[in-house]
Length: 187
Image 1 (cartoon, rainbow, N blue to C red):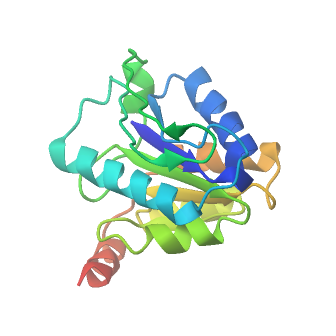
Image 2: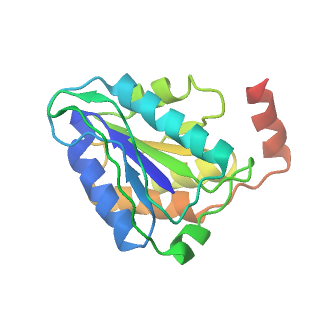
């Protein structure tokens, strides 16, 4: 399952990324926003991190898309995103597992990606990486076991974003000396 959220400054890119993922058969849980109306990015980073951590702890079924955000949105008031849809499990099985043996990952998008990454990294168990290139996305997974990809709509074009997504979802965590370093972050 791929959880995705943005603020108003990342809304357009979030829509593009969601479509890219769905075309490739990934299960996508869209946690908002639903328009370019102004919202506060920490609310959406928190929502995504909580949902990601809950799904990883419960071993949620990666073949079903579900969300119940409860986030108050400027454009639509309190809104629930209850839905379920079968997705291509072969696409889900292509996601390399993280060091905690989860395949659930997140994507956060704002104007620069900075605010989302700072907000997300406040949550224990979240390793959010702000990436602006495919190499950064690859290294974030391979060496840092990133479970949340952060991007900035104002910084990256759609071609670069596609490259980052391909790298992020294709790259497994290398473990070894990198696992020891990840464990130091957790202490």
